[in-house]
Length: 570
Image 1 (cartoon, one colour):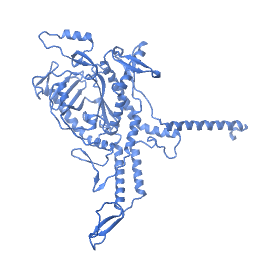
Image 2 (cartoon, one colour; image 1 turned 90 degrees about the vertical axis):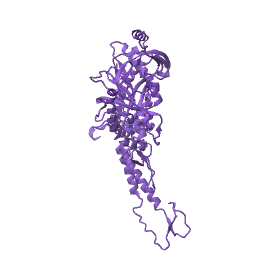
Image 3 (cartoon, one colour; image 1 turned 60 degrees about the horizontal axis):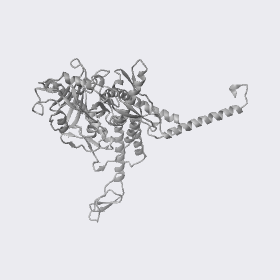
Image 4 (tube, helix red, strand yellow; image 1 turned 120 degrees about the horizontal axis):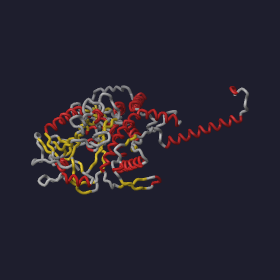
């Protein structure tokens, strides 16, 4: 847990003046001024992409008749238009579930290779891979996070993961001294630090409780990210900014500051990162936005800088990034993921976005067909004085007319027919082409295709469209895993893990930070996409059996046919 900021008498720091944080004075205006300007520009840039993301989420949740307020960007559900009930026939969910299942089924866990010029390198690599595999499954829950990431990417197009070490959880280990906000875990270094900083007439050395902690992969949706406008590649970002709603009580307990309450609407993406909220937003009470800014290494800050602030207060400052001793240089631990990269902008394009148009037309056609059928039901016209029932829209309803007035002239128009069904089928084909997934990917055998090789080829063609996305995801997972291994250095030296070996035999592994070298390589996994269902496997076996039978029959025919002199005519 980070130490509390050393504030003066007022628990809420002023907007101007200087502030002492861990013995160092910071000018509030000079420190917060550039970040407030960055925040304002990034929020204005982000706002232009949020309406489309909200529409994507609504369509993913099955709410596909919408009105968008062009002024505020709010998306409103619509159930009726001009007294006509709107019909929804969702075809996008099957594509979403299919692509999420296919992408999440791949292997994204990398391998670690240690650099040593002796036989110990293999043992060190095995130790790194074993302990990382245990954390992958049991601590930061990587498989679950990967699934959440793909749920976000298919609807939002952009998401991020922040790897950090949380000291507020785990077993209580005691009280240790802190240096620059980080606990000193080595007992010998802790005693030396206490002795060197002891002053009889000065303030005591900062000592705080220490817990075992754990590595966390924090999922961040597009609403949590504020990025520099006009920069397409995140590798070129000069700074990163994260926006999170935090309870005011938690901020007060951690930093000793009372931040202002803000009007915050909750959403699934803002609070949990799932991105599939289909309920109306509600107000979060007693919450405020807390911002974490990472300034990447530059001439002024060679180790980078981390600043934490709210709308009205400077909360904390670190004159380095979270991973200052990373083998690749100071790192933030923040990694961006995009579904489809669009040249000229950073926010990615979501998977579901091309299918919104065909889905809208499909719903419109079904609504029109439903309205035409309802309004062309048989009716009985009677005079007003006659005993009649209110109009219900049901078959053979009673409709009142004035005595002596002519009956309404009804124009039948174009009756429902096969052309409407063909138009609906056309929209299905449009959605299929727009989303880049054919019937084979959805588990449906194409007409006239039964051979495994043909189905494998069709599936491979669909997979080719997903391979660049999967490759970009693997590359980001390698970078994220690299930071995760550095975060694992915070594990206590006696941390024990049970790892399943061959034949389901358990073995105990004790974490040793000394076995993690300063130089190592993270190698990404590779894999293809082929039909893996039981039906596809049975078809493959059937094709092999048919091929073997044909070859056997051909050999029998050759052995029973007499040899001729002219081989070409045989």
